[in-house]
Length: 126
Image: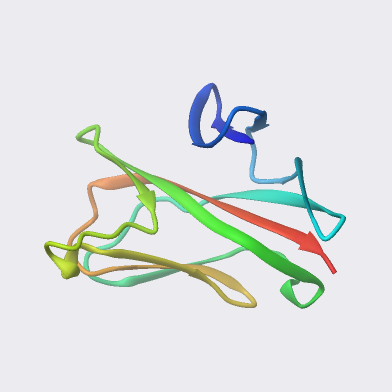
C-alpha cells in the first residue's frame, strides 16, 4: 500500500491509498482478518528541543495500533520520515509515539524549521 498526501507519495508500496483530510480511511491491509484503517493527523510545526502533543481523537482501548509513522517538511525543502534517527548525533533524533489521548513528538534539537508535519496512525478495531 502506498500513502499519498495530495498527489505526493509519502510512504509504502504500490497500491495507492489517498488521504487528503484528517479523517479515518480504509486501507487494503488486514491483520488477523481485521481491516486496517489509517488516520492522518495534521501535526503542524515541530519544536525546539521539546515535546509536542496533539490529540488524535481515537479510543485506543477499542483499537490495536499496527504502525505509526509520519513526515516532517522543513522550509528549506528537507523532509524527514518520522520517527527520525541520526546515529552520528543522537540529540538530532526525533521520537514519535502514541498514548491513549495524544500523538507525541519529542525533538532533541531545534526543529522549528519543520513547519509542516503529518502523522499516519494505522490501526484495526478490536
